[in-house]
Image (cartoon, rainbow, N blue to C red; front, side, top):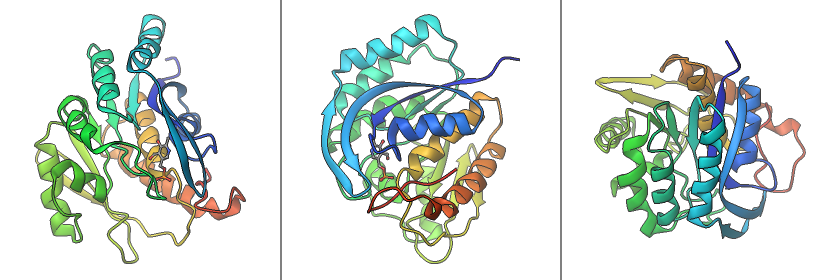
Length: 260
Ligand code: PLP
């Protein structure tokens, strides 16, 4: 069998820790041929985002069409979609795609810079959530999608993961890294099944791009036809190692990237 392929539809982080740069590194690390269609350019480094420049929605669609015209795509990861118009363009461009789609509903960068305007949350919810094989929100993103408070208990995470499934994705991996305490539990839900994926909280400030890296690695595993929840268990352990290795890097003066 030939090498599996994955396409990231996401924004650029020139500092290399998040966005399509992180996605392509994760695809390679997980043994998949990576491709990327850009939705936005950011100017940023490990200390924050200083600017965002959107790609015209028609050109986002043109990039995706160029790939589909020529290349077999085994899985798609969608990251920063930047505007309601780009969300619509992406939804239309991938309408004929029958493979797995991992959707990371990127909203705010770690430094607090918004990466998705509030008026685009509705388009993300109505056009892209129903297309997702797997949705990977953190707790603040889940709260924004549901219009409720950020979960602060495991019981509330269990309630929210079911509410998110009600919005249309086939499966949801609700990331509990914001829960606090010494653990970082994630909750995977599909159909009637929910599974807690336990993991330690790794004490480091270097977690830039962890969401991008996780969702891309999951897309890579699905591209290789690995099944959930096995893929999620494998990727969580791999990412925990990458966060633990982050302090070996000496990249920037703020929230540095993970190292895998
Ligand atoms: N920049 C881009 C282009 C992204 O896609 C993301 C993804 O979440 C971020 C920045 C945010 O990275 P972080 O919040 O991990 O710093």
